[in-house]
Image (cartoon, rainbow over all chains, first blue to last red; front, side, top):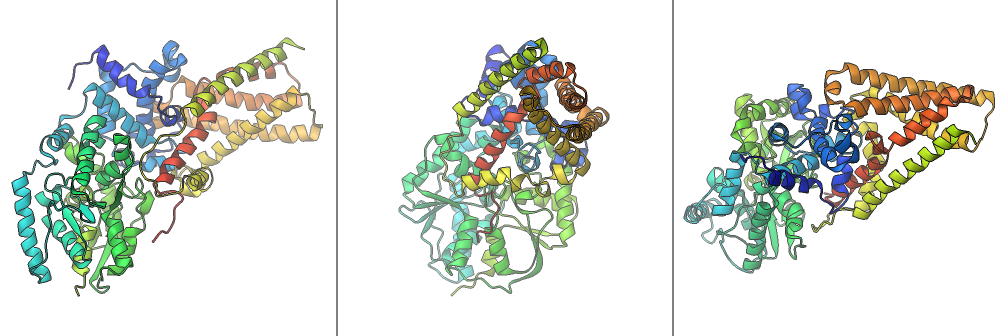
Length: 431
Length: 205
């Protein structure tokens, strides 16, 4: 942590004084303190502590805005509870913005006014980033990305080695010596990205996607220099670092001259590259960027891959990753895919854009100091899963997979957690 | 012209100028410059944001809090009615007694809704923790505005103009300025979800 200086305070306040557009000033002036947002937040629902009301998080940032940017706040601060940006409030900001919000955005939809609360929390994180108050744990994940090219610090040799044995497995599975996992090849249709958790902990999800590409006869490649779709710089609010990570993937696209970039099953990574990335770079992409979920749905729809509709007989449910669904608009594709494969698909309540966050978003998985809280808020998701009586939970996001695996164990759900690619690969009919 | 009417007109002018300042600030800064490739329809989403997206069926803040939501809606309707009546009173439009009684009853009901909301703010732990003097002042002024309008319709009183003047002067200062920022907030939410194809909800596949 940094010592608070006048320069630091000015850096933080500069974020609040942003005049680029009217979004910030609008959201900073809109909350009416009705307090009706509590039931939309998993933290408040779990703890019933007024501190965790989304409106309190909004108030924390608006009270500072009022103190430094409004006439009343400057001159009669008690009237609107305008607060100084001091050590005490910074400590509260770190705890609430990093440790008590996954920026899932569910409260936005249910806010009586329509305040973009997640955006304000993100703005708060940006202030903390500017002032050097990012928790060390999550910052170390960003540092790993910046220094090694991926957030797990996997060496290139280790990665290539993993891909080699996965390729051997693929050949065995599809019974074709020509089956490949092409690396660093230029001029392909697709450059496929990965969440580094895949090569590190879940390599079978890479072979699952490789099998899908094989079945679709796709022209594709993986880069061994820049394959990491995650972007924890987005979570920390450090625009510079988030931009570096986005730029690397952008440059690798150019270097390999692929036509489309396919975003792996990673909610925040998809969001950070597809939706935030062009704004970090202040440039429109001149290539197509879609998620693997959309790609697989398209393969099935167009008949490029065939799947066995009788394959999955167990009851299946789906967890919607917040960044992919509520904040990314990918709502129906995953349902289409599952309905092509599973006979017994049951939705959670609520689901789709109204889903409950699993508790692993917003960088929570990288901040061990909040582990206890993360498991506590996961109880809502555990209850949702239990209520479906499903045996398999599918989610197209590796961060969600991690959190759900931990929830599964903690709340003794006895379910299997799978990615979409995994269940599709299992159901593929090879011709 | 009486001094209290002059006071009200000056307050109204100040309110209007300050509101215009906020409006210019919002409009001049404009919408976010987004370089990402939109997959949705912003226009439809903004429309959705102001219509079905506001439906009580879509919002937990409404359907999980029916009494508060209902009281809030009545309270807001009472405010709109009071504002409309303010303009009519200024231009000296008079209704007959029957209409005045009906309007007064409506405003008493909405005013009592405001009092109910205030009591809830005082009694509920999490709301009290969230509240600041501005929240209480805003409620008292709006409730007072409605109740004094109701009284003024039945018994002409100069107090009406004094209370309305205070209300008008405070309107653009505290949280009551959400009356202008609310529209911008709904627009931005529609813009955000519209570009990403989240709103309006659809079955694409």
